[in-house]
Image 1 (cartoon, one colour):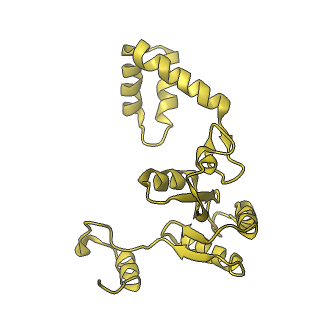
Image 2 (tube, one colour; image 1 turned 90 degrees about the vertical axis):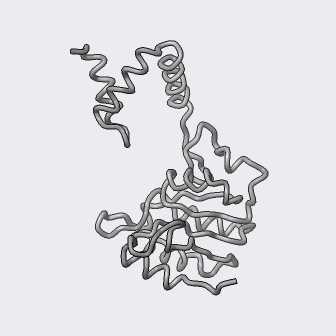
Image 3 (cartoon, helix red, strand yellow; image 1 turned 180 degrees about the vertical axis):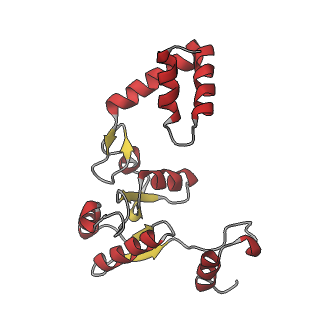
Length: 198
């Protein structure tokens, strides 16, 4: 049996996404065994981030600086703006290093079932950014869900009068995907989004 303090640490780690009680227990055991090389640096990093954590007032990213590292990077193409639902989407896209522009985080997606309305998201801030000028393209990188597509449609309507090119991420067949393993919705989207060869 372990002390209540160690058990409390295990329970806190188990609350994190992707970690269950067994994984959390293994992580705590590893941290305790490697106290100097793992536990202390982790604790220091958590403390530092906890003290400095801010939401970027420009794009909505979470970082330790405002503006965030992406918004402050002069190498980024400020003419391209990628709109995402959540910070996790921004991080996933940015990790790919395929989008050279800047981002805008909505903070969710429209959902009648969950009661999420346009005023609950940072849509007005997006419109303000676009209205300020200097943006040529807005990429609507919403998830391929009903709510995501509803949000993309709403954003397209809100941005309709501005001189920007609206684009949307392609949906359909994943690389390496086999047709007989795909659901009907994915196949239908792939067929609708087909393009000429060559």
